[in-house]
Image (tube, rainbow, N blue to C red; front, side, top):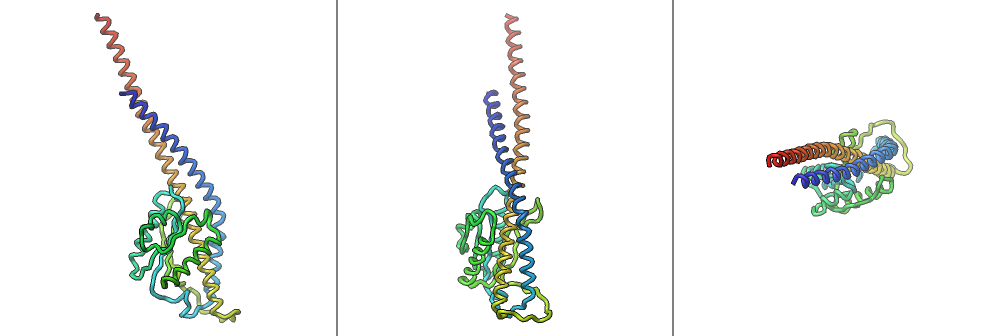
Length: 278
């Protein structure tokens, strides 16, 4: 019986060591990808700031389709295509569902990412989903997402578009956040007048489109950065837990082995004494 228990514990130790090698490797892969995306995201954020600055210099008409307040809310949910990043995706999905409950004019979800699509699959409010669009987000994928959003806005008469994404706070904290994409909030100030070529209306539409594109690009990119950090943290925690478990199992194995050896010695001594008495 003792040998069977020892074998069981030894198998668990070997299995946990194999798992720890995998989680450690995935932690290192996530760290390498973090270094890669961190070099790319800053230009994306800079472009978004410039787009917002340009937008603030052109005052839109009150009835412009990108600035006008109207009924109907669409929620754009950004999740990941891969798992193994803790509660990152489930937190985003739960946050998006709660946001939907806040709007009496809620129309539905537009979901990007395999994990979010799987969670919303049985939900009749998922209007459209996209999976495996990108490994590292690029301008083309951002443009495709924006075209989807504008198409859904037109089809379902949505005056408001909110985006739920994974906000990157720091290396340890990545959390869901909601921002408004449409209608665009004009934050410009009345300054000297400008003369525009082409017309004001056409120019503001083009600037608004580029501004929205920069926002979508930034948000999907930031979610990707948050994903890698969340995965690295999850894999590090898994590796640490595996290491602790191996320590506990090794201690239990050694104690049981020592007890088994002690028991065998006792049996040998008792047997020897019995023989002497005979």
